[in-house]
Amino acid sequence: MSVCRSRKLESPPTISLKDVSYRSLTMPIVLLFNPNSGRGKGTAAAREIASHLRAQQVQIVEVELARTLTHADFTSTLEGARALIAIGGDGTVSFAAPAVAQTNVPIYHLPLGTENLFSREFAMTATPDAISKALTQFRIKRVDLARCNNQTMLLVASFGPDASIIHRLAQKRKGAISHRTYLTPIVSELRHLTFTRHRVTVDGQEMTCEDPSIVIVANSRQYAARLDPAQDAKMDDGLLDVAILPYTTRANLIAWAGQLKFARSRARKRMHYQQGRQVTVESIDRPLIAQIDGEAISCESNKADVTINPGALPVLLPDPSEIRGRPQASGARGFC
Image (cartoon, rainbow, N blue to C red; front, side):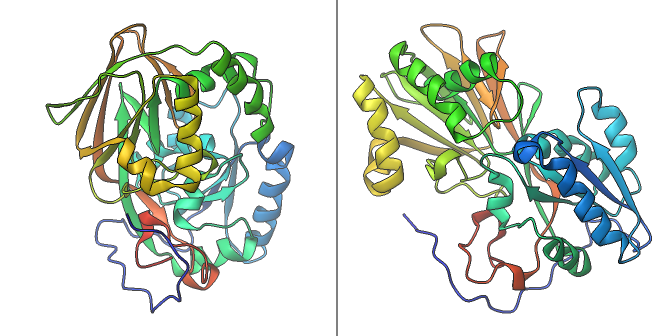
C-alpha cells in the first residue's frame, strides 16, 4: 500500500478549463463563513480575507452561514460569482457543495474546523496570501461528488459505532466543537456498544462479512484523526471506496484505531475493501445508524444507497508555491 510522502514539486501541468465557464476578473468572490468555526473566529477571518482582497480591487460578497440560510438562496447568491471561499469546517464546505456543483463556481476551503478534511485533501491553507495566489493562478480541478439517500456526500459516509458517536455528539452539541468534545460520546459508545451486522452490496455484488462491523463508504481518503481507512480513495477517479471493519469485542473495535494509525498494512489485511460506483448498505440486526461528512442522518428505510457523480465539483487549487514540501493529497495528484 502506497504511503504519502513529501517531495519536491515539478512544474505544474497545464489545467484544461474547457469544462469550466469563463470567469471574468470583474466577477465577485463570494465568502461563505461560519461565525462559530475556529471557536468563534469565523467572522474575523472573513473580515480579514475580505479586507485583503478588496485592497486588490476585488469585489466581495459576504454570506453568513446562519440557520436561516437556505440552499436556494445561497445558490442564487453564488450565480455569477468568479469563485467561492468557504470559511469554516467541513460542514461549511458540505453545505456549499450542491450550489457549487449547480453553478459551476469553483470552491476554495479556508480551514477553521475541527478536522478540515477537504482542505487537507488539497493542501489548502488559511492565509490571505495563499488565497490571493490561488485566485491569480485560477487552477481548477474537477472532482467527484456523491449522494447518499438523496443527500450530498462530499467526503465520506459511515455506518455502525463510528456513526453512533456522531449521533451521540449531535444530541449534546452546543455551538463549536473540538477534538475534546468527542471524548464523552466515544466513552459512552464503548460502554453501550451494540454489535450490528451489515449487508453491503457494491455494483450489485455482495461483500461478505458475517461479523458486526463499521462500514465506511469514501469519496476521499481523508478521515478523522488521520485514521484514513480508505487509503486508495481518490476524489477524481469516479469510484467509491468501501472499507468494512469487522469487530466481535470492544477490544477489537479499539484495536482498529491503533492499527489504522500506526500499523496500516496490518489493518488493511484485516479489513474488507472494494471499489465501485453504486453502494448499498443495510443493517441486519437493528436500525441503520449513519453519518455523512460528520453530520448525523436518519435512514428511515433502514438502507442507504450511495452513488457517485464523477467530476461534478470544481475546486480552486492552491498555488504550487504554497504547498511545496507538504504531503501530497490524493485528490490533487501532480500538484501537491
